[in-house]
Image (cartoon, rainbow, N blue to C red):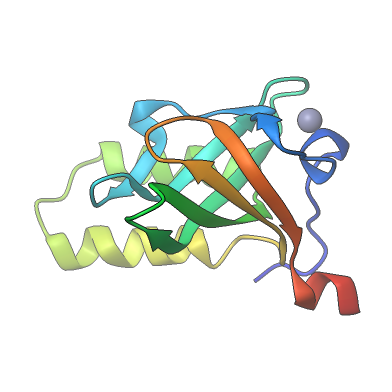
Length: 131
Ligand SMILES: [Zn+2]
């Protein structure tokens, strides 16, 4: 983890309603009936963040995600490495884990309505609140 990384001011101020970020299909890095790990981009400044599934509630059809900062350079490097091509699933997983290790601390938990970028709840992550 990179403790010095923080979300851009727009993503740090994330609130219920339309998400202040975009989620490109090619930047969803792990999928299981919805994004599990993905890179999102701030709509205001193109700052990157890392979205990781924390909890899903199939009855309410919502998913809770952790949101942490990540540097655009690290995301670009990941995609360059991946584009170089490897059919080796374990190596692909290792590259994804290497990218996940480049994130800042989890700052927020956001709950999204399934299949949408509609935020139904936001919570400050306890570790972040303590810091
Ligand atoms: Zn921003």
